[in-house]
Image (cartoon, rainbow, N blue to C red):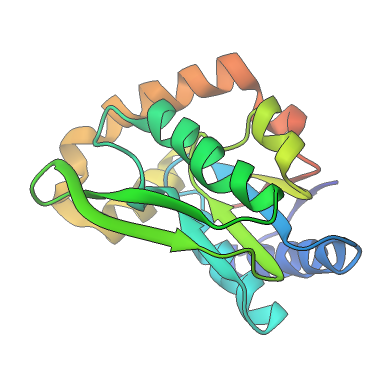
Length: 190
């Protein structure tokens, strides 16, 4: 399904309703929702909205997994292997978190049990391999200027020097995997 809307809030709300309807049709547990999109597209906000509409869902954020500013692909691979694959087998997923302040992997293990609905969101997560493990797949798209403004507002000056570096990794992901083509839902946001 392809859609667009005028305001970000309206667009996200309409999109969340569609995804929640799709989740309701899933007949296995956990129902796995994968949300991909470039930085600042609204993935985290969208995941939170879906979870709220469902009355709760486990959310795995790749921001906790990426191994630093050059780790988009590695983080997505880790999420697929250590989160999506075990969940699809009805097992708990777990991973070591990244400590962004010290720029190194922490000793803290985070885990997610196969709850009724698990949402995995992050740039780079939607690939042909991860799509096979998911029940509902989403690609969020928005204009570069709007995304950049949202990302810098969210992360402040911490992100500014890394924007283009991260964007190049997103570009590589789009060239290699074409997530908009793989996704069941594509939402073009303002």
